Length: 465
RNA sequence: GGUACCCUGGCCGAGUGGUUAGGCAACGGUCUGCAAAACCGUGAACAGCAGUUCGAUUCUGCUGGGUACCUCCA
Image (cartoon, rainbow, N blue to C red; front, side, top):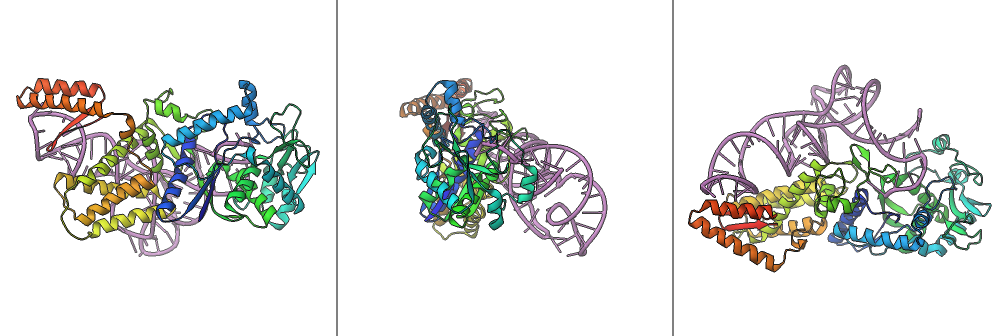
């Protein structure tokens, strides 16, 4: 079994375009592994406690703060934004994780992990809080391997923050925090009535559901330091080894070259993208064009948002989906698989299996699109074998692995609508037969203004919404 | 300041020590009553300078520009 753990969102606000990137990236990874025959356990957490506004130890819990402002229970905030996150991820056609654990539901596991780290001698108790002792840990295990730092440069660059008096060193991080009187979310522990540190939940929950050693740990690049570095240190301190075979980090989505982020206030929520209700959006974009936009870049590269790029992605996506739809109706002649199609299939798999290079895989799929169109047009011929392979490339890879669903089909165009459109098109055909082109053009224009595009082909008139 | 990364044609975006990435846009053609779509074809790029090399967009160094992390962020 392949075990994958991905850091999920802290649910105190709506999911934005940035959240779509790991959502989609790891979704494609999971789909690919399943397609290749692996049994996958995909764990993605919901952070609902312990994530402080800053690390000064005086920082307020993000969720508790939102709850205070909105005058709601913290768990109401959590529930509200968790549901909205699920909705957004579903619209992006991501598969739900196998397990979606919440930090607040794993307090005993976290307490026991703190005890283990204390027993191992890599943590100390100070005024009811427990801190990870980075310096003593570093004597046996290098701290900073994941992010390419050494303790020396961590030391020289750690800010001395106010209110960190309980810590021996500014770079030590909290495993358990004693709650201040006004703190809402709190639990009993051997050290104090308090709450777990943010980094702790992922160590505790990944071990619980995936074991002491699992295959892939994913997350955004911004979590590399300190979050994943601390996680790695906690794992190693508690069990003697890091426990993760491969770390995977998706890069950021930028806007005007700058990271899109909550703290920068330059983010666009997914809902705004889907509805076009944000001042920098020229119009609404479908979830699938956003998915395609993200997959056209490699997950480790930054990807810059712009209306132009999104519109280009949408057109490319539609072109591919049209070919995917057309392939089953193609004429094919009996015969063997051609070298061209065989090479094409191989190239697609090679790309996906080479560090999930969706960008190159899509480029090859566009070769398949061209072939489909040529055959449809009659300027190229394929064998039945070829057709079968092409069909599986679109259905199993483009739709199955890349998760590109046909959002037109789900767009609510009912049977009645299509019958009505057919009726109108029949009237247009009659007008054309009578060479009443003024009339036929008028019908076309009025359909266009309703959002229905039509095109005349040899086989008849096709239409899309 | 420390660390890492990036700079590719009009735009987005892969990739490689010598061979067309791809998408969008543009241009020419085919098709069409016209349009759209589709198809065929075309052009266009590797920030600058120096070095290594038979050969560099790809390696090295420098310069310029930009980004991320170093406090929370996917």
